[in-house]
Image 1 (cartoon, rainbow, N blue to C red):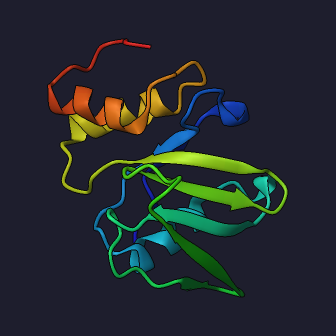
Image 2: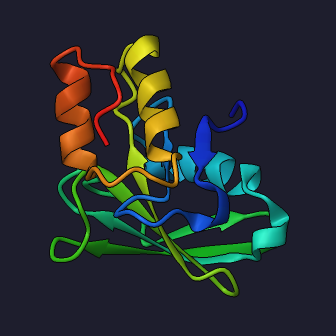
Length: 140
């Protein structure tokens, strides 16, 4: 897989999101290794990933990476449908907006930048609704 399209808020951010990820397809077992491989090793090792069962039906509960296995937890309770939670061994918990693979480049660019803005207070659902409506302005 090509390099992941991901943007993280510096310092982890302070809103409900800590960045965004724009996968190329909806097959988590193919996309997750590229995402995790693109993250700064200084953050530590991602030990667990939590995804929503609605957004990722049939996803495996473990994804193998070179030298390790990542636990994938399915949740319909705390996980936001358009978000993925990453739990590091040392850097804590981060929630990323998951941009639909078929999203336009213009909307995805705005979503990546806005979700990675440490001042962003919008939820994943709100940001996607704004992008779908064609609004790409500053709305924090």
